[in-house]
Image (cartoon, rainbow, N blue to C red; front, side, top):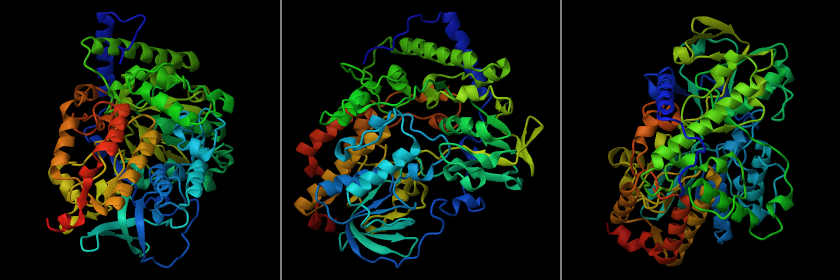
Length: 605
């Protein structure tokens, strides 16, 4: 990759001053509890007990049948795995999903203003295959959800799907060479293969604020928006908030989208902010099929590959997407666990200079758009670009110019002090609110498998969670694991990543389908040898980037475990997503047999 460029690099004195400012701002926000400052969304918060979109699930008889592949999770990962399997001729594919329909994150999250921050034409998968062309540069959530349904319908995934159903255990039956899948609806069915696609944004979290249970007003989490209380829809019109004092906790990517919508209808809106987001220009607009060359076969695949190359630090002849992601691509090196850089000696100095220029531009935008100087100062982000996920909005900053919007900056007190029956206390001041909205996101990277909510018992009853605790993650390419035959895991662990994760998931789905087809053709089990896992861990560890120091200096957030830092390690493929996808393609053509074990050999272990 080329070095990040800065037309006017800062002087050594300016660099030193900015580093010190970043350190001071970080220390104002770090809490000693680290990730422990959050709590699970347990049953006493009733809005997580039922599905707000379908209510109580319809009664049905438990299933005790046999399928070829069981997929845990009906978000894009599960849908794409199912779609790719069906296109390979696999007949009985069953997706098991906790929600009432397909969509995953986009099923649960329907808050006002919800959009994707990646361009629609590269974020929505399988556009070439489905023939769909998005209307907007950045799709609203409902368009994304409907596209998930479109893929599932065209792939025939509804026929065997189980909705409003959670998988409660996966148990390998060595005699039958099948997985026994148990659910909370009494199902106990069997599957030759299991694919886990439980996602990285599936476990909502709440802040562990003292007194949170004492608050007597109305509350809900953005992933379970209560339109019965607010009225309106994701497009706005929240007429139920007329005359109401509303508080929002959280100013990350969700808060940046929600707050302008709430500001339009609430009598008074209090925005409780610990750390301001870096809010860049979105540039939302309608786009025509001609602009994306949609008449050309393979247009969407070419466009998303172009984006992936640019944001992965690879060379590209042109920038087809041309947005703030691609413009700031050189600064993603510290954000992505797998980003290609070949150790240029001048990289860090050039990177820091470009980072300073970008963040100075973002801070200048705040002062240009927010009229009150004190509010503008509190909204300025004082940290480096890759410390937190960048956000994009054309409406967020102007919302603070409204007379009914009050920014309550909590950085001096390291966050909200406590809650009372009437409201929220910050710095000894009580802010009375009728309704409190938690835009506090998810426990990123936590799934049923890694949290223990979904126990997985492999050969000889060995528990996957126990193996992870004792030996750490051990896989081949992040997909398969010794001791757990015919189990395929989707996700970023020991795999590759990108800001456009739907692209990553589709590549993973293609690979998963190829694994299943290869095992069926050879009548074999999918299971890497321990030596293959060792070799892959060595690949991931050998060139793992040194990002620990960077994240240790960052403002607290989920990227650095709330200020605890993010240690280096063999957690991802270290040479970027483009190289990883090329590696997988070559491996499927030349070496796929190394993951295929004869059933008789497996039985004799």
